[in-house]
Image 1 (cartoon, rainbow, N blue to C red):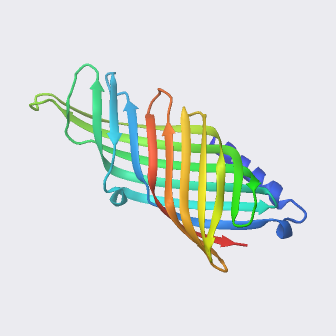
Image 2 (image 1 turned 180 degrees about the vertical axis):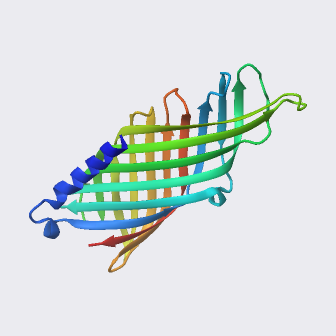
Image 3 (image 1 turned 135 degrees about the horizontal axis):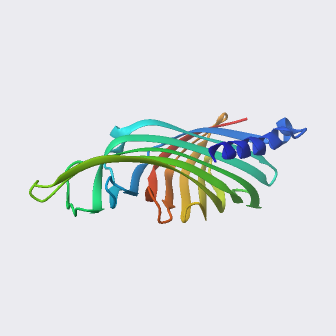
Length: 259
């Protein structure tokens, strides 16, 4: 599935580059993004011996658990048409997790020490058409797909109310999601070199529902722009393991280079 999305991206941008006047007619922007999201998730795993363990994450100090990250955006525009590809990779390790329920041979109500590891790759590829190009404001209708590969590991350590019963274990699982999305994006001039930029999409497919929204204030330079904003990405999954729902939400700084 991941290979398929790479082929789609290569095909889309290959068609653009194959245009006889690509260098003249297409304007490009490549951006490096620094997104600092907090992660909220609910996971469901099957412990040894059967049953189900449900855990929830809501880390307060997520930066201390951030192991690796990469984020970038590439977009092209020609007249009313546009293409955008956005890539996010995040790796979090050993962040505190709360067990919501443990259903199995034993009902164990106390969470002694549970931790999660999360690795996530998300890419969104959309094509757009300008609905409004009046001076000072631009809005595009966009449609495309979002692919996510999420890998979750849960290490739990549970005990009975008086420590008479204890159990521990770990589980790991990966899952791929491909969803069709539609939305809008655009910008509004605020005067001088300042502008307001926004993006929103929603869709479904492998997941029950996914949506993303971002907004920020940008300042334009001769070489490109810098944007400071906020970004939110959410997933609601079908009733299967290991992930029930997941959100990434936090501030984002973007440096874009035009050519």
